[in-house]
Length: 437
Image 1 (cartoon, helix red, strand yellow):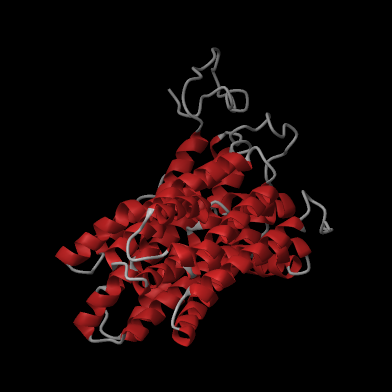
Image 2: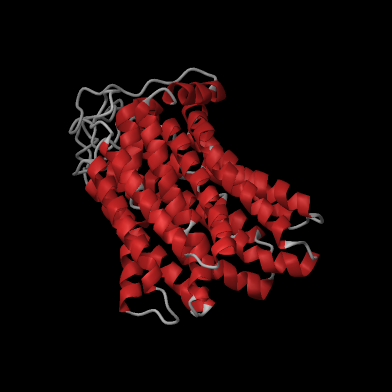
C-alpha cells in the first residue's frame, strides 16, 4: 500500500501499466511526510544556532580566550545565518531541496567536527562562525518556505507555522540535553551534528518527481500549472531578485517590518531580558526559566498563527501582533522585580504567543507579492530581521552602559513596534505594486 494514495492525490497520480482496479485511499499524502522531515531539519538547525551560548564559559576556561573573541564567532554565525538564506533558496530551485539540505548538513557537520580540534580563536570564527553559520542558514526559514510552497496548495499557513514553531521547539526540547552533555561530557558536540545528517536523506525535491501533485492541488487553484524549472545561475538570480525587490515598495515595507521583529525579539528580549531582570534583583536561573517559558508559548503561538494565516488577511494579523507586542514591551519596566509575580507570568505567556507568530504571515505575503521568487525574497527579508536583531543587541548594551538600566530600551522597542503597525497598514492586499494609503 502506497503512502501517496489519498483522496487528494488519487486523481492526479500517473497510472501504471496493468492498473485495472482503484487503489486504497487511506494513507497520508507524501507532502505531510516531507513536512515532518523538514521539521526535523529545522529543529537541528535551531539547536545549533543556540549552542554558542553554552560554549562561552567552557572555551574561556579551556583556552583562556577572551569572551569577545568567542562572541565574534557567534556574531559571524548570526550574520551568515541571515545572509546565506536567499542564496540557499535559489540553490534549492536550481539543484533541489534534497541536494542543498544534505550539502548544508554536511557543511554543518564538517564545521562542528573541525571545532573539536581547533587550537586558536580565529579557527572558532572560521569553523563555527563561517561553516556552521552558512550551513544552518541554508536549512532555516527559507528552507521551510520552499517546502511549503512546493508541496502544499492548501494548509500552507499551517505548515509554515508548524515548521517555524519547530525552531522554537528544537531549542526548548534539545538545548537542555545539550547543556547537560556540555556540563557532564565536555563541550565537543560531534555526536549531535552526526545525528543531524540523516534528517534530509528522505526529502524529495518536488511532488511531481514522484508522480504527485501538491497537497490540495485542484481544490484551491485548479488551473495552476506545475511550477517551471528555473534556469541555471542561482547566485545571479538571487542578486537579480534583490535588485528588483529593492525597487518594490512592498519589499521595503516587509523588510522594515521584519527588521523591527528581529530587533524586538532576538535582539532585545533574547539577549537582554536576563540581565535586565538581574538588575531588578531576580536570580539568573529564574530569569532564564522565564525566557524558556516564552519559547514554550512561541511554539503554540506560531502554529496558531499559521492556522490563522490560512483563514485571515495576513496584514491584519501582523498589525495585531505588533500592536500587542508594543503594549507588552511598554509595560515591561514596571513588571520586572526580584520575584516573578502573576503580571510578569502573564507577560511571558502573551509575549511568547506573539514572539514568532509574525513569520507565517510574512512568508505568505512574500509568496503573494512575488510568486515563484517568494522564498528568495523572504530570504532577504529574513536577512533584514537578523540585521535588526544584531543592531538592537548592540544598542541594548550601549543603553545599559550609558543610562545604567534597560527601561529606555523597552520603551524604544515599543515605539518601533508601533512604527511596524504603520508600515503594515501601507501594504497592499495582494499582487499590485502600488502601496495602499
